[in-house]
Image 1 (cartoon, protein in one colour):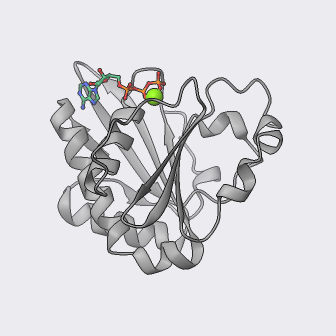
Image 2 (spheres, helix red, strand yellow; image 1 turned 90 degrees about the horizontal axis):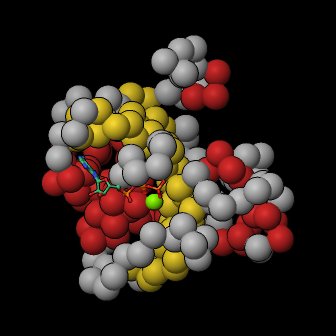
Length: 177
Ligand SMILES: Nc1ncnc2c1ncn2[C@@H]1O[C@H](COP(=O)(O)OP(=O)(O)OP(=O)(O)O)[C@@H](O)[C@H]1O
Ligand SMILES: [Mg+2]
């Protein structure tokens, strides 16, 4: 668990994730990368993605994809797709929108509300769950693949106390704590 008492801490975590991604660029080119962002409304998912994009070199506006569902970027010569499935009424909308083909080599996919595309998404390499905690936030970071674990280790070295590697996140007891 990493404590994020202020928005600046969310920015710091995003920058650390961006550096982890850039140091694994070759894997992204050959396999792609998926980042899940869970947590209630206003918990800071978009803020974190904005910080990641800044860290990857995006200079322009980073809008919430809540209404557009997808906001695409090209950063560091890689595709970055920022999804928000909040408005999905049925996970099948993932297929009809043609999003499946965007999860491919050379593309990073950051997904807010991944639960609303349940059963449709490929393995989430790195899953961040944000919680409101007083005036601030807390983040739980879990890796579900080797590349996710590599990135998590990188983030851990910059944000002491952050996360843990959980090879089987789906059956982790106490996940609803
Ligand atoms: N560590 C933090 N401490 C306090 N406030 C924060 C922190 N990180 C982000 N925030 C604030 O939380 C607010 C909501 O953030 P954001 O829009 O990113 O949430 P979200 O999870 O994407 O919401 P939604 O589910 O509606 O898409 C913003 O005003 C942002 O500044
Ligand atoms: Mg959002």
